[in-house]
Amino acid sequence: MTLPPIDEWWPELSDDARRAVIGSGSRHLDEDVREEIREITGAVVGMIETLSEDDLAYARKHAPDDE
Image 1: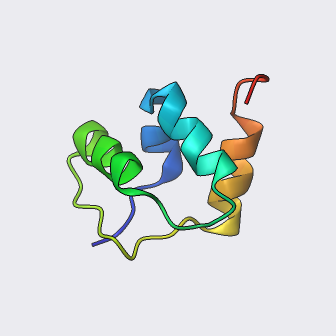
Image 2: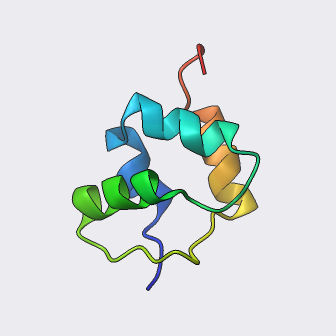
């Protein structure tokens, strides 16, 4: 199980899931976010998958201003 590149799923992620990623204070993805990524990409996203620092930087850079 490997997390697909963030640029493949971040643009399609719901606003709630984006807030969960940015606001969690953790690199681990919660179950709802993993499920959305699976639906978007078709990839199996396991419980141990984490975002890299680069992924978090991407998410912060591409988040709407209200997040």
